[in-house]
Length: 122
Image 1 (tube, helix red, strand yellow):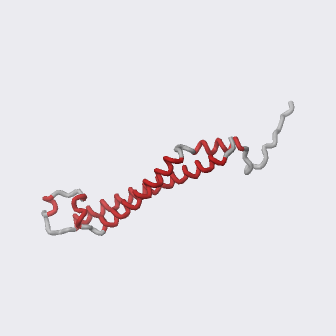
Image 2: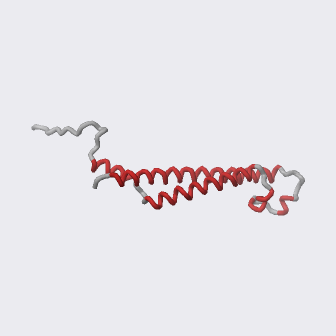
Image 3: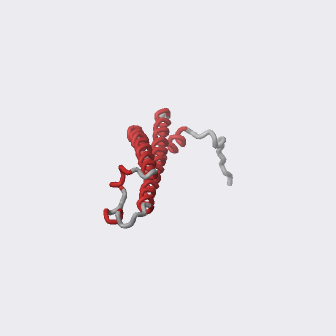
């Protein structure tokens, strides 16, 4: 029995078909959807980070967005419970901003994969 061995070359030199299939495997959305995701995630990060800052500094304008009832506001004279709720909502805003950062990174990767796909020879 003789075995036929083929030389595939160094692993850094992939064939164009293999390179194209690797790029296509990670490509989920098109360039327009990726650009839209970048714009929306940028706006979401800016908006939610600002809201998080304003909630953690206990902005009086945002009292309507804190989950308290009118009875619990006037129950005792201690504002620490209200401040804790402000901080909780602020931390939730920061967590949502972090999720938007991940979404923006994903959209940026998709945009780069779409750019690489444009330069491949079919």
